[in-house]
Image (cartoon, rainbow, N blue to C red):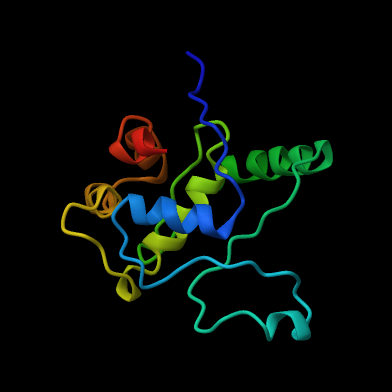
Length: 147
C-alpha cells in the first residue's frame, strides 16, 4: 500500500501560526522568519524563541546520505530520550507539519491550548507511543484531517 501524501504546508510564518491556532494552540506564541544565522540577522529575531524549524532543499546527494545513515543505524539500538517527542514521517509532503508537531510537542510547558485542541489531544494520546506508532496514528487523526 502506498503511503499517504498531503499538500505541503506553506513555508510561511503566518500560515504556520494560523494552522497551529486552528489545531487549538492559543496564539500566545507565533512563528517568524529567520533570515540567516549571522549574529546581525539573529539579533532581529523576536525573543524568546522556543524552537527553530530549518528548511532546506532535498537533493539526490542528501537522499543518498540519509539512506546510508539509516542503514548504519538499523543494526544499532538508537535510544531517544523519553523527554524528547519524536514522530517518524511516513506521510509524503508532511515535513512542515511534522516539524510543527515537534516544535509544539517539545515545548508544551510554554504553550497554552484550547480545551478541545486537536493538537493537544493528539499529543496526549501519542505520548507513550513509539515514533512509528505516532506516525501511523497521525495518518488517521484529526490533525491530518485539518491539514
